[in-house]
Amino acid sequence: MVLAFALVTSLATGCRSEFFPSESGAAPELVADLRGTGRVLATTTTERYWDGHTEITDILVLDVGGSSFRDGLDKALGILRARGWEAEDPPHLWRTRLESDKWDGAWIAVEPLMNYEVATSEGFDEQLDTSNATLFKRLIKRNTSGHLVVVEAHPDPDN
Image (cartoon, rainbow, N blue to C red):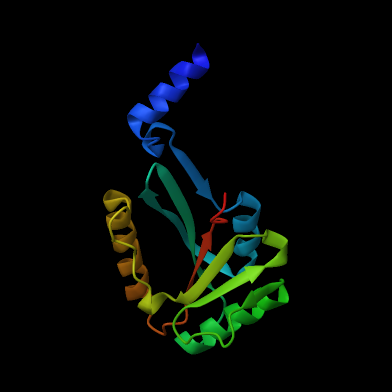
């Protein structure tokens, strides 16, 4: 009887995932490990909602001791490579994606703070992203040399 009810309910609702919401985010241990990349100036998250699933991206703003945006990015990439992260080849000047065997399926992105854009497309949390935009504007004003970097930790897309 219960099985029949579940089957009818699934068919009637079109198996919509909104009725069974889920969320994913990077492992807390991964984010903790990324904190060792440099001096953490700010942490936040952004959330993207799609078809009943919320994907949470952890965001860290780091000072890795660079003297310019390029130097900061190069230093961050060097530190991350030494910790087992592999960058796409060749790394991009503005945003580089990295993966690690240690964190199977998860990936990170690194880019200079000066050109970081807070996600605002459909499915993102407008209130949270407005707060993040204010945070990043304030950090960019204080970051006159452009050496700060943003590291985003993304969850395994299959989980």
